[in-house]
Amino acid sequence: MADSDCTIYRASTTAPVNIAVIKYWGKRNATLNLPTNSSLSVTLSQRSLRTLTTASCSATYPAADSLTLNGKPQDIQSSKRTIACLSNLRSLRRALEEADPSLPKLSTLPLRIVSENNFPTAAGLASSAAGFAALVRAVADLYRLPQSPRDISRIARQGSGSACRSVMGGYVAWRAGTLADGSDSLAEEVAPASHWPEMRAMILVVSAEKKDVPSTDGMQTTVATSSLFATRAASVVPERMAAMEAAIRNKDFPAFAEITMRDSNSFHATCLDSWPPIFYMNDISRAAIRLVHDINCAVGRTVCAYTFDAGPNAVIYYLEKDSELVAGTFKAILSSSADGWDGPFGEPLKNITSPGVSLDKLDSRAVDILKEGVSRVILTGVGEGPVSVDEHLVSETGEIVTDRS
Ligand code: ADP
Ligand code: DP6
Image (tube, rainbow, N blue to C red; front, side):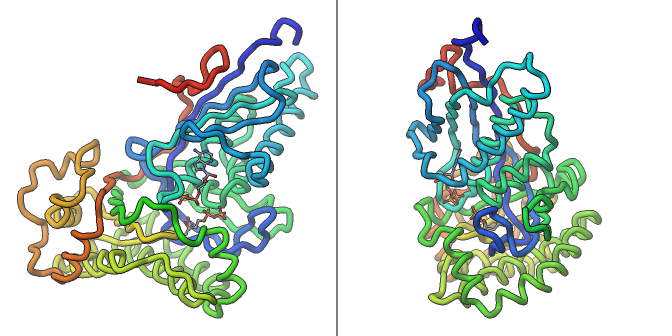
């Protein structure tokens, strides 16, 4: 490597967030990050929410690997999960170098990883999913690993469980697997985004604050104390996985919607059934639930579905053709109090002047609560998986790029 001693090797990727419609909640092995049940999510478009990560390595860098997130150095030496991801990736690179000695010995060089989320971090908007998917994909690209997205998902899973689903676009299942070493616990594409591209998601941002009980801790409490939990993992979720995959294959929105809502409710029921109880939803979340049911009732068919992760933000799925009925109604309620109506997914709402569903068909208290509590909406839809990009957060000379304007 004599003449490449000062070389800065770089690779950059963007990665999406995903929002589960069958929730992952519970680990059977916390060290390997193996789940008690399979889960299924929709990957959301990177035109709205995305992580951009540059992975670089060089003999000129200080000896310890580093990660800078949104301009702030992170303590990765004490993050077992990040260490697990990086050491897996390094061993795969080492194997390539051993098989082909002409390859530069990148596995021996310190890594400098720089990442930016274009949305709030640790605020219940799935930054850990996009973040670890981007980190693993960027390092895999830097190392020119031949591994498939399925193999990459197995590594991303160790960063954060939900991250394994963000290494693919469209509709993605995380198969829980049964093997003790976790080698069969990985993501699989159920259908590409192009199979059902009309899926839309509207996120009602109820709180952009850091969440109370981190999901990792919350799920451990649930597994240890909830009596509802065992049935959920053993029979409720497996049945729903099969039904959800069929709904996606058949593009059956009413079935997709009902399973999504029921599974969100079931997951939050196990949280309430934990000891001490865990509350992720609040009055504003419950008002959103009420309005979704009111809209479906007023329209006379199921046009929208809610789901909530480990926080109060509502994610509402609907089909593009029903934009006016669903997003148009929420816009009529929220346009004076919440921003976020522009952008690529706001186009169908531009010329709407009246709510798709008359507001007098909706619970007026829920309308008021929502108006008070939602400050921002994010309009998005199903999208693609990680994308390699030429926009780098590390310069050709190895410095962190701070000003990208
Ligand atoms: P969220 O609801 O946003 O997923 P979590 O608290 O579950 O919140 O996860 C946030 C954590 O995920 C951060 O503290 C950080 O460790 C990790 N994370 C978020 N974004 C990135 C990123 N772009 N690159 C690497 N790690 C990230
Ligand atoms: C409610 O993936 O954040 O969003 O594996 O401990 O990092 P760790 O947990 P994480 O949990 C996500 C939980 C959820 C449901 C889901 O995304 O499936």
